[in-house]
Image (cartoon, rainbow, N blue to C red):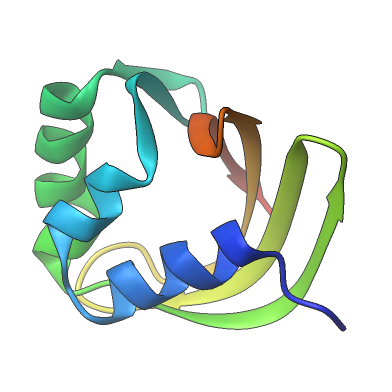
Amino acid sequence: MTTPAIVSAVIAAVNDGNVSRFLDLFDTMGVVDDWGSIYRGHEAIRAWSDRELIGVAANFTLEDTGEHGDTAWMRVQVGGNGFTGPSRFAFSMHDGRIARMTITAD
């Protein structure tokens, strides 16, 4: 399994608890779609992460990943002090940054 660069970068930022590095992966108007709840732009994504991801010490264990053109995905086991369990993340890229990160059930 070859891990797409964006998947490695997201996992590293989350597992290191580095919200600044996580935000730098997103386009300035990037979007997080967390099971249908939409957060657009760095300020909204930071607030979401503080409540749902890095702020609750989330960590990811990669189970599977793939890439096709400007999209990549990962299936991870989420641990930490918030949601725990399997999740699937899909990444739509634009100019080397995440335009949209969509989180769904595994």
